[in-house]
Image (cartoon, rainbow, N blue to C red; front, side, top):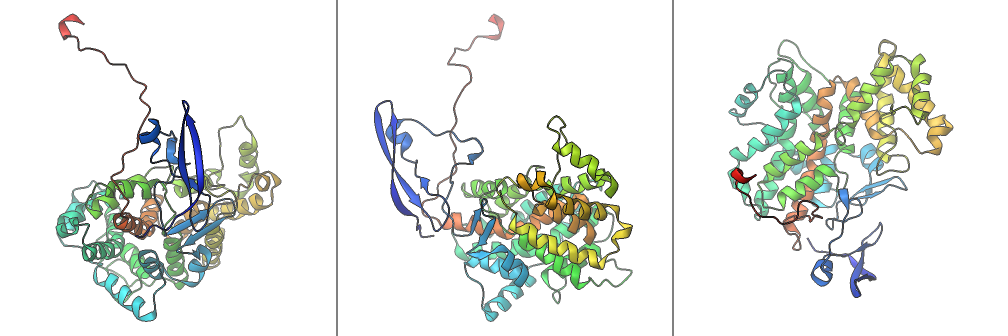
Length: 434
């Protein structure tokens, strides 16, 4: 990857009388950054930034976020345009290759993905080693890592062809693994992929069909599933993506690096947010109890929080939420929400939050997690599968970021520093003298 950041100026820092000059670099958009990599060599000090929230770990051409303005771009294209006009596999091609495909390129790419959807039959035995009540994310994490045993040639990360094959295999096989994790958890037989179905429809069929009857997914559910995947495809240098890059920086097998990302996503502060939002809706129970919970959310002394509102990055309306809101409403039109109190609560809470001065003034808008949890519930997935679906959509982002890092000539093995605050040097004392 050719680095294209431009030098915008110089920042100076005085360390015990020694002035160190550091270049200020600028990208296509977003704030400039101070390049501090020579700071330790020249001044003998590190920077401290817990959570790395003020530190750029890499240069990337894939995704841009402006949280203040509510902007999310993939390779320059707004997320709302991609979600409304495109499809998940086309977005996959865009993230992997940098440009939208021609019709011929897309046909070839979609066909390639389809041809890699099946799993080696021996992998089915791995599922049998899990308890039936195992969390689907435990099965997903393990089986993604296990793919390395079946494709040892992919260990050569410096081979562009092997990287391309690994990318396609991961995108193609993730739905099959995810569907198997779900089927195993509910005690139903595995369903093999079909080459005549779209990516989203194939996944729904593998999850919800049974041998005893014919399964046909509705166009609304297929489109909703496709949008869910698009909206989760990539989100810059979040915890799981940074994990993939860090694991991959050691030269680890691509399947191992992606498995590390799946494990990171499992955390409730990352991939579990939509599950928390749905649990909150079920806790509220019925629309008439919403004022009680709104009052609690406004009370500074009450630990209760409205989940699915506001965002760590977006200080404006989450651009993904707008598309997900439309998708949820389309699903609601197809379903009888009068029979689903959770969906009734969601629709009423959304209305109140968008009009209540308290939420508007604090910019606590419904985020993508609020709507995606409702959408996945409406499609038919249990909460235990929500993070699995997140991982399914995010796979292409992880793969694209990993490939970009490998191709970056400036990349080095990740090695954050620390401030040591433990015991000072001391001598060992034999146990008999302690």
